[in-house]
Image (cartoon, rainbow over all chains, first blue to last red; front, side, top):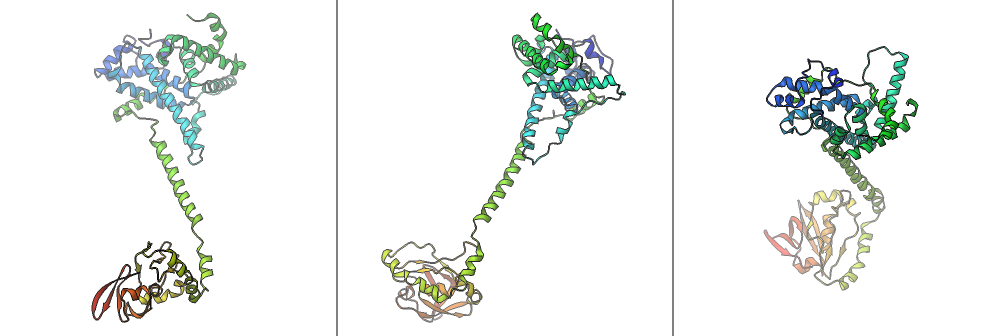
Length: 209
Length: 229
């Protein structure tokens, strides 16, 4: 299914010359045998989708980039233990998801601590960060930005069990099967969660529909 | 594959989400990943160590604050006690003590428990300086006949006044005068513990302590005398 992971959108942001002829699994085999360029190609294929996924998940660009890097570091160190029966995209999204869930728990703990008033969390300020944009802002773009912010806030307000599948499905364009595999759930459960998530968002985003 | 109706109903939400601007990884992304990899260890985030460290810090501060707060709250105010006890002359103290003794003697059998076995005698020179404050102490309960003495050393709190060595000695029936840094027995009261134990006028108490036994210099020799209560 997603073995080669080289659909158009993912290849867009690559900076080096893409190697569309090699599948993800071939690149992993090459990395195992010491081919550093192959790992560079894996990063080129997945750094933007993973960063975007984590950004939508956490609604915090800096944190998303940090965790995306962490994801690749983990992939690199665990590359000998990777089994090829799963699609690599499933594997890497799963790692990113787990890291993001841990990060959210860590934030909750931090917020709990900061409630005592003894410790101020310096990270809390960056939650509303938007990625820098050098272009001049036209009115239409400002409206778009406003809309994006509202949608992002609505997504961020969803419970994790709805947030993960709807981002993977509707933003990352993963198939229902793959979303189910990433979450480790059955297909039926996954579909009903996506449907429920859309219903929740529909209530909040009526103005934009 | 999907429920058509459901899909139709929610398609616009899916389209809306799909139209969101995508963010890209920053330019130095690969470089930073490789730097992490070169460092060798996957950075571990979200360990419990920082939170436990912080909680421990808060807990220890609260414990310390609670401890000192408790102490300052429950320690007896020293000033009023001193103020009230200073004017009381020593004669009244002993008078107050004496009536108690027969009662205690009758009700308590001879070998009663003694909370303190030893009285530390301070050298006479040092003693004279604190004689005024020494008299402030609550009168010691002395049992002359029955044989137990309850002598408080008064060291439980640094503010508690210390009893003079002269008073301590008189409790067991010894009148003493300073002789250099020791105490010379100048009087042995009748029917006192000192008399029963065989202490004599002219003995010089050495060692600075009076407990179950007392060491005295008699005719140039050191004699250890067991005190009979």
